[in-house]
Image 1 (tube, rainbow, N blue to C red):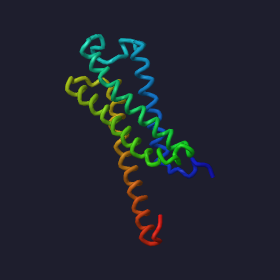
Image 2 (tube, rainbow, N blue to C red; image 1 turned 90 degrees about the vertical axis):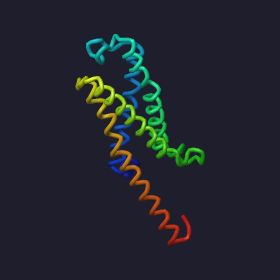
Image 3 (cartoon, rainbow, N blue to C red; image 1 turned 60 degrees about the vertical axis):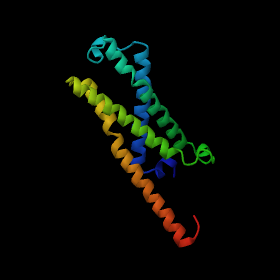
Length: 162
């Protein structure tokens, strides 16, 4: 039985969504910083310096989400790293931080486009995805984590050891 066979489908789905999102953030910012986005495919008022500043204000948030997500995926997929005492227990908090930052980025963008009355699906669809996909993922991971903590507490109560 491989590690993938033992990993619940919900966790595999979350990991895949995080990987696509985190790599997508890095690709988007690489393309944006290199000015490779054709103006006709860019957001409304792309040439306006204030809009450009608004877009680049997301850079630290998106990179933080991406880095924490990719590090958490690395920790989850590397048994040797995961078993080191200094790394033990970092996977879930980093995953939750990454998902929260990702959802926050989507929320900020959706709120902004709403205030501007810009309803372009080109920008709404990806930002709604950023806003929404982390929410059930966070709930799933927290419920799963709370369930394992409950099992550990029950095990200690019954056996007297972990």
